[in-house]
Length: 383
Picture 1 (tube, helix red, strand yellow):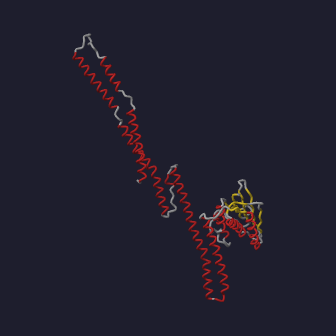
Picture 2 (spheres, rainbow, N blue to C red; picture 1 turned 90 degrees about the horizontal axis):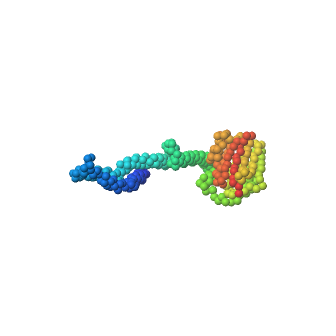
Picture 3 (cartoon, helix red, strand yellow; picture 1 turned 120 degrees about the vertical axis):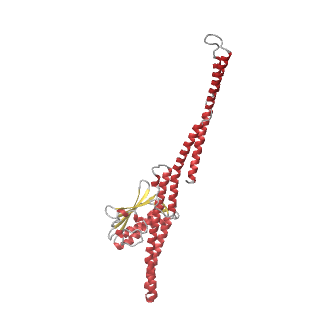
């Protein structure tokens, strides 16, 4: 048993011992004093002793002395019995002590056992066993300690998920960087072997270094958002102006696919936040919709205010949509749907958009449209 068990045990046992002793002393001290009653009873018996025998003759001195002797012995015995009743009740105190000992041990064990289990679970997690859970070891408890066990399980699950995301992120980063770095190395070697083609190789080097720069920039943005370093969030941002700019740029890109980007926006749309981050988030969502729209289709950008005074911005496309099982995972870094694996990109745009929206106190969800395509809905608190 640990020190906590013995502390609980000693405190509970001591408290009950003091209680038992106090009750015993109170019983002893508060009993009515019957000593005077015994003395009065003895005097009454002496005064009521017989003065004559059965024949009416006075008792002889020897008979009277014998009566006095017997009555005195009876009085002394009664007084001793009465005095013994006044002694502290040692038997109840001893019995109470034994019961207190057992009860204190059980109560201390009841409190110390889940705490020992929690300590063992923390040690396991600290040693890298992130799949450790403690809820089953709590049994049928419904108290603060069982709540602490549930909180520990949630913490362990969250840590396990974050570690898995980190491992996957490192794997994906290394995979994404490997290809352009390999091309850079190959182009450098070829340029040394074929100096006459230097201009061609330099152009390739610029393209690959540009891709690496974009990837590193997005990774830095993602890391900054995940670490809570989103920057100042107290600007008054005119989201309507942002959307007008984004729709204009997206329409220019969509012309090559004969697509149209249409906006249905209110006259005023402003929130409190970070201008640059909001621009990146909204641009990523709109460009993602343009990227996944087939030729000749439309991309819609609409904004309305709901009853809770939140701005609801919806970006829709008419593409193939996303499998139902992937609607939440599309916001994970480097995620690429199996149905849309042929599209370029690193899979960081929607992940950044989700974190930017959350940093502004909003939500972002994706859903397949009944008429086909995907709808991404962003909800942001109004100014």
